[in-house]
Image (cartoon, rainbow, N blue to C red; front, top):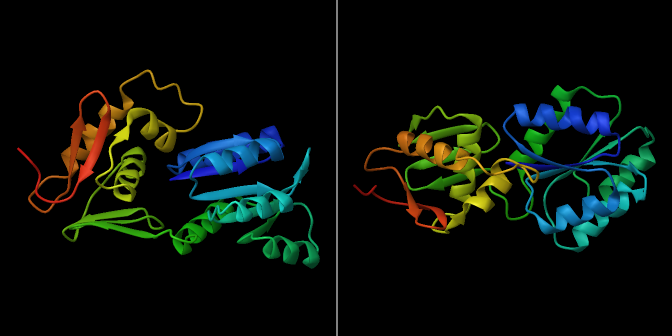
Length: 226
């Protein structure tokens, strides 16, 4: 799953990025309204953490812009403002939740999980391909009713495959979603992660991951090929 953090406090943004990455998210950060708008419109995010006070504008206008642009990812607003009027305004412009600073990361993380569980328009909290079921909010995967134990990156990659089943994904697309915007994809991390998933997705009931030579990978439902 991929998050966007729009926060002009570099120290806080760095702390949030480390915390969310430890939870298995790919995280992009923006420090201005303009950068946040560009990233949020150009990339698919599962949720946006949005600071209200930005150096070139306020988060309320950014949230409204995203809704007008048809972006439905849940938005959690961060602010030092405590007035009821500000909270109501944040919800009125399309925000989904509102957290006042200072806050604990555990509460923020729980709220993000809840937003993802509810999902935005067209977002399914539970993905299913044949006998394979992935619960995005609970971070659980079952194959024919049996739980699979995946690493954080394997879970994120499997989620991406299941959201785009039968669609060929390039290595660049995979790195951008499963790692983050700034990752230097010169290593074989994608291939290693795919290998780990293939080891887990065994048996006649399991979907299988095909290699498309020179391009990337694709998840196919049905019986695995020899």
